[in-house]
Length: 197
Image 1 (cartoon, one colour):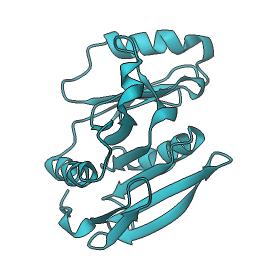
Image 2 (tube, rainbow, N blue to C red):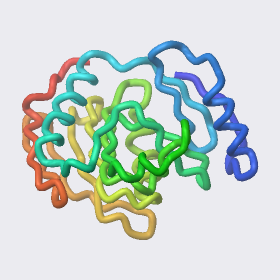
Image 3 (cartoon, rainbow, N blue to C red):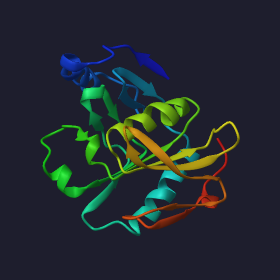
């Protein structure tokens, strides 16, 4: 993982930062995000990471309304905080995407659910920075699949953001079930998740 420092509160520098993010020649397959005004480049995720994303995405499709989509490579932005993330999965209503022009990032505030799956290089960002950012943006639900939690692999569901802070709605170990409330009303069996790195 590498980072390129930028203005901590981008403000007037946001457009330049996004242009640099868009126009630079990043390593193929890498994930490039703007986290609190810093461009962060992480390597492509390993196969177990992608298998977990696929399992969750498949389950989500079974309950989503026709006019909502699940995306794996969609940039979602929160410019006032200097953030442009590419969640492992994000659920966005189709109407939001239909209103955007060209390559404009999607407003993070329009996400219904974000899912992050930790990798060794990004676990602290997913646990701290992104949990705070998603709560500040008012994303109703954040599912953190922490393959590298110190006490062993866990899945934590955050929700009910209030005063820019999430409540921990449920925390389970790999092998147990986690339940996403309405509008999803979906139980995910984490026993199907691969345990390997």
